Image 1 (cartoon, rainbow, N blue to C red):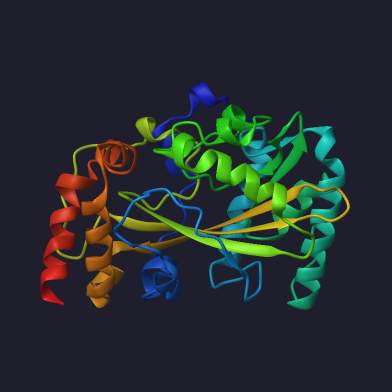
Image 2 (cartoon, helix red, strand yellow):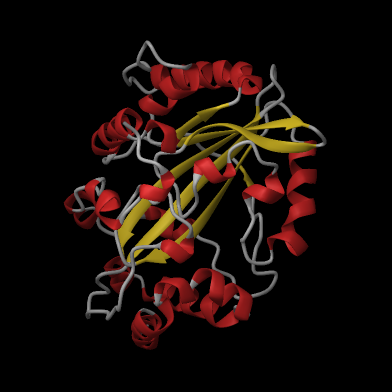
Length: 306
């Protein structure tokens, strides 16, 4: 039986924690160089770029993450899957695209016996969100969201873009109108990508909680950056030609903070970005997880050594 949102506990989240040894042994991730860490306002940016490589990723963590996705969809279905029938056509299109990608990469097909969107979400590492144009806005009307970053599908499902991003610092005044215009102007065959970054004191993939409810206590940072982890989302957006919906994919990638020991230049960039934030952005990104007193001094030491 799926857990109700009100019943989510720290123990439940940790029961779905991945084996971190694979991530710790992987070394410095190539995606560090894709991060946009420019220290300048506006602090919230779309930063979308035309896609110049494959739109989905199959990496060395595929087997582990696919297994976890199946487990979440089996055990916590109501928390990680939601569909409005208005998005069914878009779901069929999505599955066709995923099946094509799986074939071209020599990977097993999506499993039978599930809703098309759920079948697609069980076959790849990415989460899938369908944004459907209706009632004068774009609505989140379909999703497989196994690895959410501090938001709840049950809270956001069916809502327009401005409500989906409720609580994001500076979103309403800086990004809300631009995001809707960007969606309105997307054309078939156009795929764009972006990447974000957060730093968290745990290696969890499944975090369907608001930032204020994260499982964080008092923290101190060791010489190698423990217990902090870099958490990055590789995101793509494309317009589905038949349904007119937008398919938004999210590939969550983790690396222990200690990879910055080998990249003090990126540590310095991250520190400069943190220092450029105003109070609202600090409260949104840092204050809720004690990052400022625990992690930033460690970054300062790394940056001073480059």
